[in-house]
Image 1 (cartoon, protein in one colour):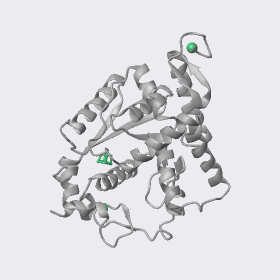
Image 2 (tube, rainbow, N blue to C red; image 1 turned 90 degrees about the horizontal axis):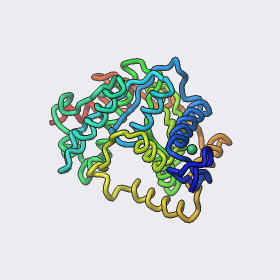
Image 3 (cartoon, rainbow, N blue to C red; image 1 turned 45 degrees about the horizontal axis):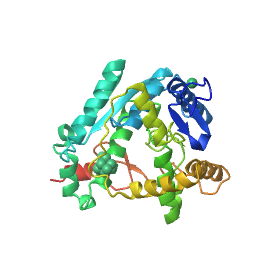
Length: 307
Ligand code: SF4
Ligand code: ZN
Ligand code: ZN
């Protein structure tokens, strides 16, 4: 297999794009693609200050590297959840994020759950019924809360997450099987700011997991290769697995599924989310000031206050 641009040996063959590229041209191509989607979906401009959520994994570090190379103003946010799972998962992920930032002279904010609330995620999840089986629902809540609060408090123009095409297609499949109109209306690459929520953008929404992994390897980025120990058996992995099987048989099926969803949204297939505080009946949490549908304290403050 040869690179379509220079005829050298290809480093990657992307069947869904019918495109093979060498290492140099693939890296250039991925950077161009990312910039194209940033513009196409009007995510942000060079004058915006961006908070990039980084987990230490391949997707978030590849994305941060590309945004940095494109000259965007970025600060990273790493949330240390204190997950060990026998592999020192959080500590090692944190180290990958720190090393990445240091090598490029980038600023990384670290939110350390134990220092902030006195316990790690698995303990917090144990205290809550949500975490009875796996801590994932507590984890999702904590991450969404911390990301939004950090972005709002420090006045960032957008919160950037590294959800890739595989993530988006898997979530879309799950929401379609459930016909969850509420969630289907929220699957866009850009969620505007409103009612106390920061603008959220996903520049990798059309970049596959394989492409972002190839980018980090070819770029020599040291990322956390192990998955979170709690991810085994998750619904999302189940859907990803099946989508990959379909992709093998029908290259491009994932991308078409997601792109046609975006077209359907444009055509008004699902009601766009209304984000005004009145419509969502939102109030401000009495402790942290974040938006909440509950009276008094938000879920995070109630959960973390409990002993
Ligand atoms: Fe959190 Fe993901 Fe790990 Fe679940 S699998 S605990 S959501 S990082
Ligand atoms: Zn080439
Ligand atoms: Zn609160």
